[in-house]
Image (cartoon, rainbow, N blue to C red; front, side, top):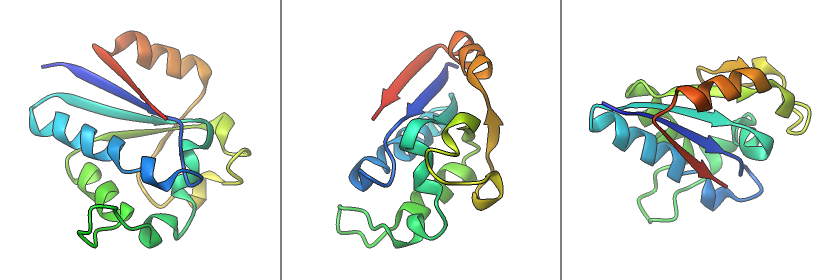
Length: 122
């Protein structure tokens, strides 16, 4: 079993890039691997209240970003939010309705060192 760490840096400014990280992490979990996602820079902005519910997938399925997030949560993907990105995204920790562990720069480095594979998505 491998431990995958996905680093998501794009957010609401690029809604078409918000879906892949959840799909990839959920696929890793389905293959019995560990999967964690770090949301940093503007990647955290996709958790602005109401954004995930209002953002539809481009595949014509009528699923929303919230459906993809829920799928990842239901498959035990761990979410980490960069505390330093909160002001950039004009968010407070309590604004995020999904399970999120808040980390700083040193924590991110520990996660990177512990991962078997790091996947950067922007």
